[in-house]
Length: 298
Ligand code: MLT
Ligand code: MN
Ligand code: ZN
Image (cartoon, rainbow, N blue to C red; front, side, top):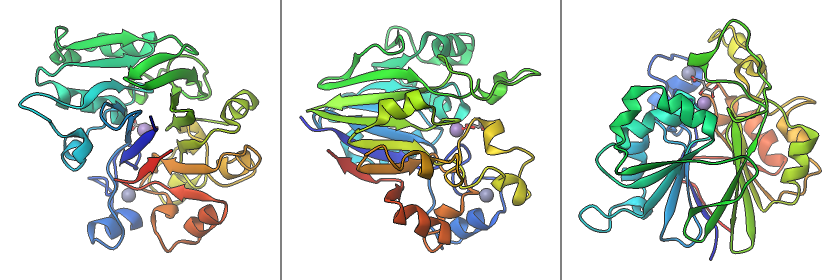
């Protein structure tokens, strides 16, 4: 048994390039000058045969097509055992609609996220006789796939954009935004694509893990405002920044995690440019900028 992860999509919602975006990074990606990245998803396995997908991005069709481990092994036999979603955001659930071809798998999420999906009849396209919707309680281990155990835990975040009311709490801790702890063959890994801040409790949980794939949405909190792309800060979107005294680089400094990979990068993030100063600072701090197709074995 060995924990095996493959990043299917390293970008945040929108991807790189984003369809309607003419920012520097999106234009560079369109021109082929920097690598394009698809939307937020990771495939994981504890034995190299049975796989689970963490977050179903709208790009899942293309992501599965270019990942041999996930290809059919028979007419309708797939190594995919389950799909888990960490929140109800469109970049993490829209891909479920692509998986509607009468294929069996288990859909794991918290009861609150299942309620969000259940309230939207379009997801009934996942036929109940094929797709088992399994609600998972926080802080309770379960089998995500054969020889791969997982546990969900609350991380500070917010409700999906399409469910935001007048008042938005951006560091809510409950069932709306979760991280995933994975265990296989004595290794411990975490996948946390959305997180508003690294609380002391979360830091204690991550301490000494073998691998953390973490929210790398933005380099700096006002990055989208400065680029003229949006009026929102990272905090308003429920995402911690990489840089700054409260940022993830600083927060992880003493956590003793040997392998740290940023995922869910927004297309505005300068670290998506391999020659940027920000990428150099991130790499100097021992982090890796996730890329589509990147593989980790523990
Ligand atoms: C996010 O990560 O903040 C969301 O995916 C944003 C969105 O829904 O577009
Ligand atoms: Mn997102
Ligand atoms: Zn852009």
